[in-house]
Each structure stands twice: as structure tokens, then as C-alpha cells.
Image (tube, rainbow, N blue to C red):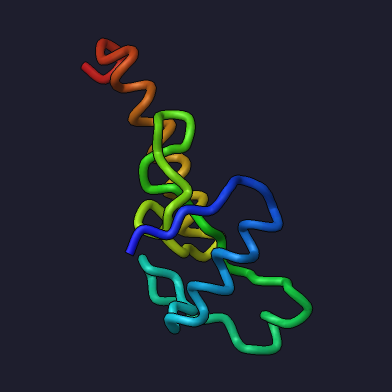
Length: 94
């Protein structure tokens, strides 16, 4: 199933709604599941993260997204930046 959504915050909420429809309501790395009271009024403590970054040609499809808690999202972003540095300047890691 390749659901493609145009970019934008309104579409982020559509993607999150679709993920909840398929009962994906936890961090896909650490399995943290926020209590239901934290998910009211459209405030969702979980973040949508691109597996393949959008700037590198990754799509907004559900297949290229992963649902992460804020901590795991920060770690994923940090590791992606570190990987960018490694590929641009491998001499820094010798």
C-alpha cells in the first residue's frame, strides 16, 4: 500500500490519522505508547520521520515514514547528520 500525501502540516495530520486507523500508536523503535489523554485535540506526542530523507528523494508515502517518540526521533536525526558528515569527510573518523 503506497499512500502518497502532498507535503504540509494538514497532510501530516492525515497521515497520523491513517496510522491510527491501522492501529499504529506507538514508537516503532522503543515501543513507547503515550497515554490516550496526551493524544487529544490533535496533539500527538509521536512524530512522523522520513526513513529516506525527503531532501534526498524520499517520498511522503506511508512506506517511507516511521512513527517515533521525541527521544528516538532526536537520535534518528542525529545519526542521519552523523552519517552525512561521515560520507562527506571520512578522514574525520580515522
